[in-house]
Length: 309
Image 1 (tube, rainbow, N blue to C red):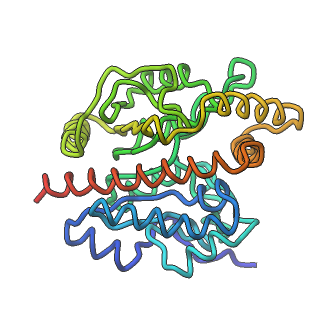
Image 2 (image 1 turned 45 degrees about the horizontal axis):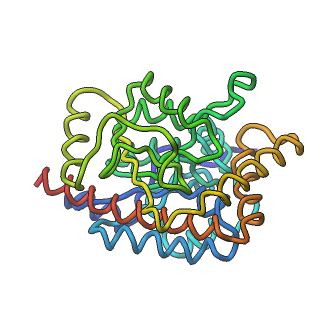
């Protein structure tokens, strides 16, 4: 049986291709959030809201996914429908892309694979919720997200709300330093903790506006490959209640351990547990922070395009 005639090179939507050709700002968006991070049917409404937030920031949204073996940077409404509706859609990191391409499979892209495909397409800014990182039991399990290594090799701005708070935040920051990934806080040197504004860790540098973030990335791109992570905390009055946060995180991690969940299955398992245990509060905060990051990413992309004009 012949294998599908697929190419690992990304296919651009007409809108994204036109924007890039004209030097207009574009922001990449991952699809794992839609396929695995948010419950159905809320995920479909969130997809439109996130793309609208990018447009509000002054850029064109480019949601990334692999469909029938072909990577897409920028999806049509029908393609977004497919990503949001398919319960069996695979979760694809960088290591999985060649398998999906060769076998004609479909999947949602993680931070690592979205970054790779965005850079390959010429997109320089990427908005997500929270990065993957070093897991709390990594001393025993060696469990560390491929996001970190990918960001050391891809040149783009990544706007996020820190790393997911189910992870070991100090160890993740140490690993990012070892990998020479540039990390700046947006308006603060306090590193955000995803659902909460303060993870308990700090960063050395801060930028105060999109123009400064664009300037840092322009300087980084001129020096060496690697990402600039812009950590954008939620305002304190929009974060998850701290007591609720600590309790449901501890319960979710314990539940994952009891169930024997390992590797890439940990994050979706824990996020689902958090959503149910918090009565939907974590979902509301998750969507809120993604929208803020998408809007800021649009503004940074616009500032970067203005520098190149």
